[in-house]
Image 1: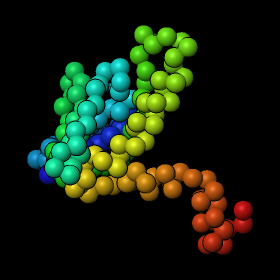
Image 2 (image 1 turned 120 degrees about the horizontal axis):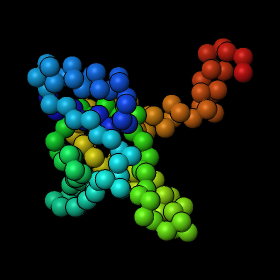
Image 3 (image 1 turned 30 degrees about the horizontal axis):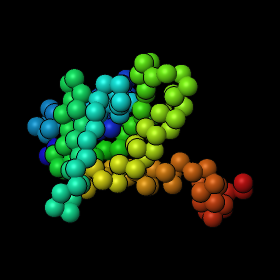
Length: 140
């Protein structure tokens, strides 16, 4: 089985699961999402009614068809390189964040997702949390 774990450096839980999966003979890859765009490039190609995605970095090579499981663990927003002009940083960051928010729907389309992106958005919405708490009888 091939597993992709989008996370952040120093996520010991992700690292331990990654090592345990490898010990069991599975192919597991930790993907530090905040390394984009300063240390990673991403490319997309639309062909045969599919979207092919790949990410590359100094020690990274990922293609969307490579994975059976994606554990949407703790991905982080892009971190821009210091070389961007200060007046362009806000716009560049916003564009990179929008890029990241949209591509989760296209990568690893045939994989089983643990904590799917759309569900994580709902789970992190405080208003929906308060509504659910109210529905089960908590006073809010």
